[in-house]
Length: 51
Image (cartoon, rainbow, N blue to C red):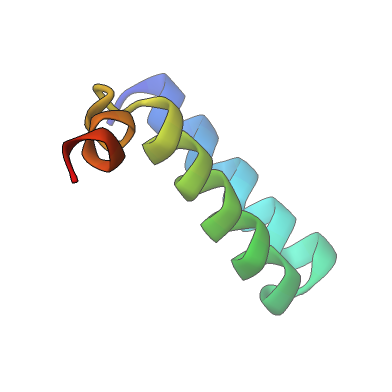
């Protein structure tokens, strides 16, 4: 496990414990969605124009 992955896990667990599991879950899902959208290769932008 890389240092970045370990830090992400520690931060995620810390947020869950500090804010509560439900709020932590919402923030985790939001963060994952942001990473997926920002890390995409642009296919999502091309789909509407292909219709």
